[in-house]
Length: 252
Ligand code: NDP
Ligand code: 8X3
Image (cartoon, rainbow, N blue to C red; front, top):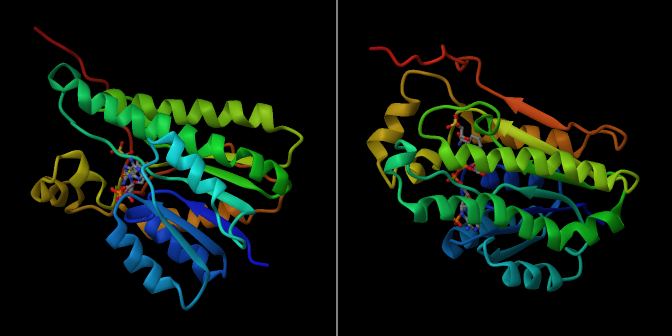
């Protein structure tokens, strides 16, 4: 029987690329996201290669998440890899100019959504045991501060610490946990972050070489298929053309 990967946020970017990467290797796929038409299109692209179960799912809705896991059809129940990828940044303005609802949306999605899915799938992953893998998509923003990152970066710090803490409790179960923390990658991320500003998104990626969704999908697949005795606690990946910068100083 094929291995099963459960991927959240499969309608775009990393999640969609991960669906293609795992499909290439013959994994059965549980794919989720809010946009049903995109899921249908992805399922149609992959269905002649592998078994696909697509679920329209908002990870913020804990009851819907639990139902989706309880109702997994035969052949999809024994999830071996969970890719907790659904997430977003909003409002890249200074914190003091941001609407509270944008902060709530980021916390509800990146923190609450991620724990909802993890909680629902933990019993299965523990049952699968050795080689089962949770990949939590964090970010360089969870480690390094920068202007306009406010709640987004803080939500990704949560992802990092939650991943480490899960490792402590899962010791002895065989279940691995990785905080996969990408740097700048060209997806729809910036379009979402800027409220649909295609020019701002194009400008961010122009004249440099960002990571691609496929680069990150390759890391996801690699982490999932490492020998069972190896756990990457955290994998931070930047493009070669990205690095840190000097501290900012306020002057008279
Ligand atoms: P995209 O915007 O291309 O994809 C985000 C995905 O998340 C979409 O499939 C979207 O699906 C899904 N999503 C958002 N909100 C929800 C929700 N409430 N319920 C279910 N699914 C949801 O961005 P990326 O692929 O770049 O982002 C994927 C992850 O990577 C995010 O966690 C992001 O924070 C992280 N990341 C991104 C980086 C980058 O530079 N691109 C760098 C570091 C981390 P739908 O709208 O259909 O629900
Ligand atoms: C998103 C990557 O560089 O915008 O998590 O913080 S970055």
